[in-house]
Length: 93
Ligand SMILES: [Zn+2]
Image (cartoon, rainbow, N blue to C red; front, side, top):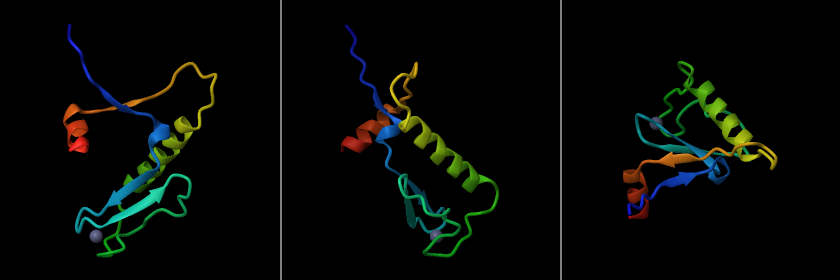
């Protein structure tokens, strides 16, 4: 017999989205229940985060997470996200 362990999360498990500055690694957290405004720049080094469409995509991700976490009973499927085994082991350590 082979037993396979998989680690999954559901959108409703997600409470916030972290934005980490690629330059200085400062983090800004947006709670899914209180997004307020888009983080336009790093609070630490002042680097702009509005170039390209990444911030728009982040907002779409936020909307999708909220949509799937608020799906009421009666839908024909539930979405779960599987994380890699290495990442799951990393989280346990
Ligand atoms: Zn920064």
